[in-house]
Image 1 (cartoon, helix red, strand yellow):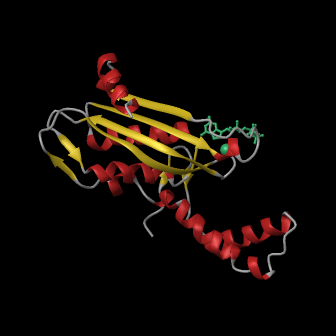
Image 2 (cartoon, rainbow, N blue to C red; image 1 turned 90 degrees about the vertical axis):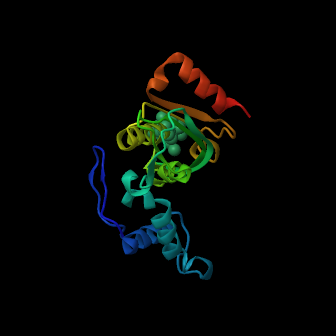
Length: 201
Ligand SMILES: Nc1nc2c(ncn2[C@@H]2O[C@H](COP(=O)(O)OP(=O)(O)OP(=O)(O)O)[C@@H](O)[C@H]2O)c(=O)[nH]1
Ligand SMILES: [Zn+2]
């Protein structure tokens, strides 16, 4: 496992404690009136603990771990990857929110770019944590700005939150759209160009 990551304003976090997670799931099953020792549930606490280790794997990754491959291609026009799958977890209810992210940037004057897949990996680093959609969007944009030093970044995230559909207000299909725009992409003409590419189906 890589070193624990210091999360913005949230202090140092420890390593994933699988045994503790397992005990917590067992307790939860008892709390809802289930019998964690019945045959179908016997392995469930261990399975759920392993699942959470995977679902929150981004807690032990840093953006610079995935934005490793950079090239100086001299390409100085916008690069945009659309419809990157987002599978994240709402930090309020620990249920999924799912959808897509669109990530675009205008490379630095030297044309420093990264591999296209690295943008999708970056989305995963931040999605695989207890999250809110606004922070996910901001973190993707700010880490790109910091590491690639591009002239501008645009990140648009569209997700459906299961905490709004499977419980609570129970509105299936409502989509939340968040954006973070940095640098030259704040210029209205450039921003509009990016948005029309993002919205084109
Ligand atoms: N801004 C924002 N809110 C979120 C996100 N995910 C979940 N929420 C909201 O977080 C809020 C938590 O509100 P609370 O009133 O503390 O919790 P609750 O009683 O479970 O709220 P309800 O969902 O309305 O039943 C809810 O309105 C959720 O819809 C997110 O990514 N961003
Ligand atoms: Zn929620």
